[in-house]
Image (tube, rainbow, N blue to C red):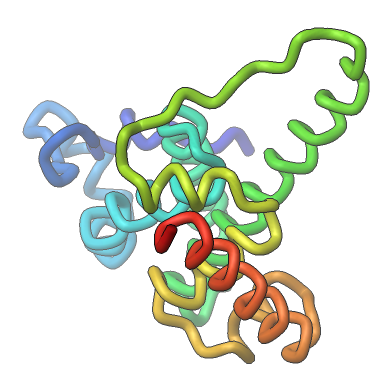
Length: 178
């Protein structure tokens, strides 16, 4: 069965919270109400999380849309939909970063794409961290997850999470506090 695009379900996203359009009432009537409510409540937060992890807003939006599409396909079988979406977003961000690392390794002799500084000191410092440190710090402090949950999400040992948090914070202190 082909998944139904969220736009056909009447769910739109943009600067404002996603809404159901009147013209899509028939398609939306077959959509679980809980799914639409979860999409409205968590879409922006998940895009911010993904953007922090992959450092590219457009890619983050695609990842979150894919995560919600995966949730929609499995809606009847998922016990905690918000946790499922967050897990899918984190895993797909890790996949995107892995693909980016492989592509960079394959283009060793070529000029690398430079990340444009945003002018936001913390954002730029986070972007300069290695992917694992950045992921752990974002999940730990932005998503406010305990170390055990971060370890489970990233498939790391709790001690590794603590170590990555310590090293990441030390690096951020060096950059932010001259």
